[in-house]
Structures are given as C-alpha cells and as structure tokens.
Amino acid sequence: MRLKFGAATDVGMVRQSNEDAFSAEGELFIVADGMGGHNAGEVASALAVTTMKSGARSGLTEPSQFRELVQQANTAIYTASLDDSAQAGMGTTVTALAVLPGEEPRVMVANVGDSRTYVWRNGRLDRISIDHSYVQELVNEGIITPEEARTHPRRNIVTRALGIDRSVQVDVFTYEVRTGDRLVLCSDGLVDEVSDAEISKVIGQHSNAQECAEALIMVANTNGGRDNTTVVVVDIADDISEPVAVIPDNDDTQQIESVPPVLVKEKRRITVGMTLFWSALVIIVLGVVVIMGVYGRSGYYLDFTGDDTVAVYRGRVGGVLWFDPTIDTETDLKGDDLPPDILRDVMTNREFASSSQARKFLSLVQQVILNSTTTTVPTTTTTVG
Image (tube, rainbow, N blue to C red; front, side, top):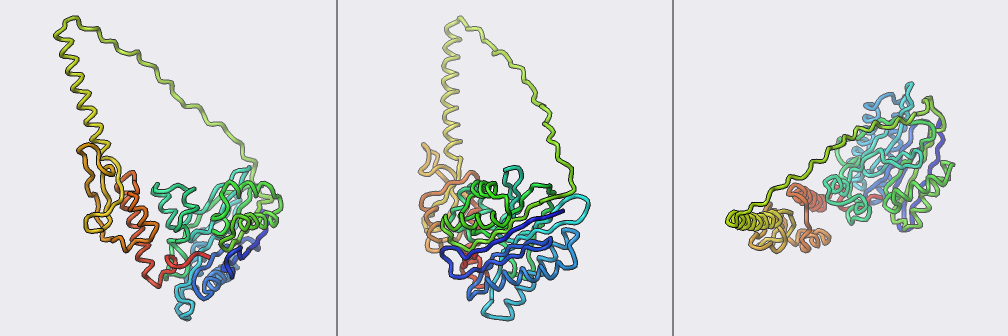
C-alpha cells in the first residue's frame, strides 16, 4: 500500500526539555514518551526508538515479531538503567505502527503505556490502542467516565512502561485499513489538552499529513501545552482493497402482542371488601418497608472507622430509618496515609455502585501509595513527559 505521512514534536508551553521521541519512515512509525529524572526520560524514549528501528530492518511479518521488537526495546532500556545510576528507574511509553505484508491491507499497532494510536475514517475517530494507566482502570471499572479521566489529578500515572522491569506485557492489535484512512499516533500531551472531538475536527480540516500533525500540536499548545506533544500522521493513500459495501442490518425486531388488562369483578359483600382493604393496606406497608430496607442497604461508600482507618460501608450515608450502614470491607489505610485528593473522596463519602468497585478503587489507591514510597517505580512520582 502507498502511504503519506507527517510528524511533529514540541516541548510545549511549560516544560524546559522534550522527553518525547518519534520515528516516521518506511513502514514503521513510533511515538515514545519518556519519564525519569536527570533527563533520563529523554534517553529512554530515544533508546526505544533506535532499538525498534534497528530491529525492524529485517522486516516484520507477524504480530509476534512486533511484540518481540518492543520487548527488545524494553531490555535495552532496563539494561541501560542498571549500568548508569543517573538513569536508574527511567522508562518510556510507546505506541508504534507497522505495515503487515500480505494481500489484505493491514497494519499492526503495538502499545505500552498511555501513548495512543487512533484511526480516522469517514469523519469518525476511533482509538485502536488501549491506555495502560491508573485512570483507564478506573474507567474500565465504571468508577469514572472517559471525560473525567482527561482531567483526573492522577491521569499521569501509567501502569505499564518500557524499562521498568526485565519484561513487559505488550498489546499488539491487527487492523484492516483502506484508502482514505488516516492513522494518528500521539503522546499524552495531545490527548490531555485536546478532546477526541476536537482532534477529529482538526483532522478533517487538513488534507496534508504534515500540516495536520503541526495543527494538532498548535491546538494542544493553545489549550495549555502543559506537556511535550508529539504527533505522527499516516495516510493510507492507496491500497489493494475493494470498496466496502455497507449492507443494512436485517430488522429482527419482534412485535410483542399487547395483553389486555385482567379486570376483577368487584365483590358485593361488605365483609369481603373490608378484608381485601386491610390486606391491601398491610401489603402496601410491608412493601414500603421492604423497599426502604433495600434502598437503605443498597450502595457502598467510603468513610473512616472509629480508629481512623478507611473502610467501605454498605448502605446509605447516615442510614435510612432503622437501616444503619455496616462495614463491608476494612483496610489498613489511615487518614495520614492518603493523598489529598483521595482523602477528600473519603471525607465526602464517595459512593460506588458495588462492593467490587469500591474494593478495586481502594486497591488502586494502595498501589499508588505503595509506588509513591518505592524509588524503583517512577510512574508514581514522575509525570509522564
């Protein structure tokens, strides 16, 4: 297939250095967003790009090779961090795209961290990659919405990155493309400042790939530019596929016949009527009690116990009638252990739809606290650059 592409990177409006790296040439496209002190993030991202470019020279013919190529980059960064104490704990996210040879026009997308790959087709923008981040896990659990994730105070925490451990789990996606598709690889400097709707709008306004990449970065800087921003735009200018015919779905909707209401003949005897009246009243009262009981015991929220530890309570804050909340899950977390934003969630009794959601949230909080005290895991102490 014939490709047209453009790429641009910018330090942004706040940062002093650019720790992003990218490559856009041939049939391999890479965006890496480095992290780590003493400019180590810049080293990690550059090392990821050079290692992958070198390893891809012999060609990539299947997803397993692409996954192994990213693993090689991970090993190179991890080894370099052990050899130089100034680079200890450095890491980088990466998202990469490679053309898959064969009769069908397909590409492979590899992803570790929160750098993204999108596809824009017929005016619609869809994300191919999946973020490996703290806020993405909250979104997956239904705790926050994707819109809330964009402004969450801990959106910079990634749960996977190259160079942190000896090996890393790599997501590889195979995607069928066709003429007119536009693929966009970017660091989180773009998506933290520009919504998907804005990205789609800018893409639709620029037919030239290079101009599109530069325009996206300009919008990110206009919206604040609080991070480095890197964008690679790849256009599928020509492929070997036939036009895709849109076949309307069959209407399998089944009409449900309406059932006429059953009419009950009124009893004429007064004694029977009174019996029915009081029976109905008792049923109503019991029904109200049951409903209030179910409501009073539904829901889960965070609060402190008597000894200042965080716990998940089942029920409603303050109780409903005589249905008082009870402790569902206790933790060892103290108020002094919590970051300010989490402490605020507990003090305002953040609510959850289920016990599993609440426990998952506390598990993520414990992981964040644990990582913040561990010098070997930079993702809890260093903002992704």
